[in-house]
Image 1 (cartoon, rainbow, N blue to C red):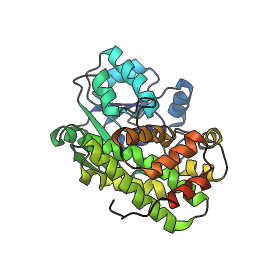
Image 2: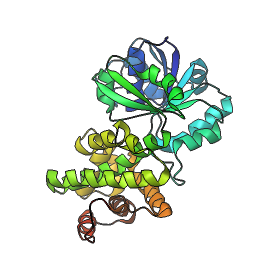
Image 3: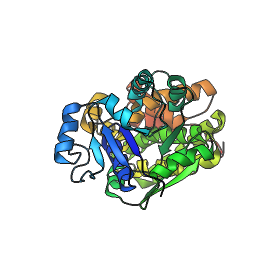
Image 4: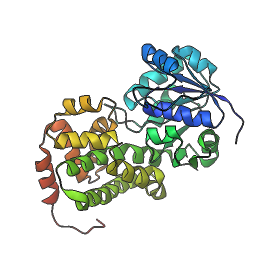
Length: 333
């Protein structure tokens, strides 16, 4: 195991808290910051994240820190676990502090309104910073409990990915370095949109045959877009692509899948988001993925229909009919 260090985790939601737990198990001294000081104080007092991960105690080497600057200054390295919509502002705050610490991030999505990847935001706000992305088929509660899991850690090249992988890699969480940042980002973002589709299908009672078809054809859409953007095929067939896609499409721990179930139940987008009560990354990503598909001339009918349901008010059953009514074509096309 690499030498222990102090790591500042920015974002005290379910995934930030789970990653803090994984880092703490590896012997690191963790500072955990969240945007709500009252909730963070309650976490510190209860020694658990009672809202998002109830019943899972915080390790002694996790310290809740409500002051952003103090938390960042304490970290020899940073791990950003904020939603994609908060990444821009978080990076601007880090830039204002002049931080030079290496950082990793774990959100899965595209910037709302621009469609930019998170590595593009980092390179703009913190030029020259060493960075890495942590992604893969993981649910926060299982990682927090120390159940076995595996993730991909991607950076500009394999050598650069190794330093961050060493923080994460432990007895119950295996980390695989990768040099394909774009592929890992794309897999993590698109699987959320496809998980919404799977939730809608299951919520409408279409069965496991339909779910298997959605996963398989959704993977084909991911591969087509990945090829257009320059992602590596092996990445999209690995943990951060196919692995994460299967996980989020098949288990109700996935917020995106549960959001799809809510839509199938007749709830509006706003009501479904309120029921979930946490960020549902696939909602914004559906719009940005639709724009990417149009811009690059990539056919993505499932993404198109999910976008139409969420952002144009199309009825879920009408969207399914549109998918099934498409012209006959070869599976490989």
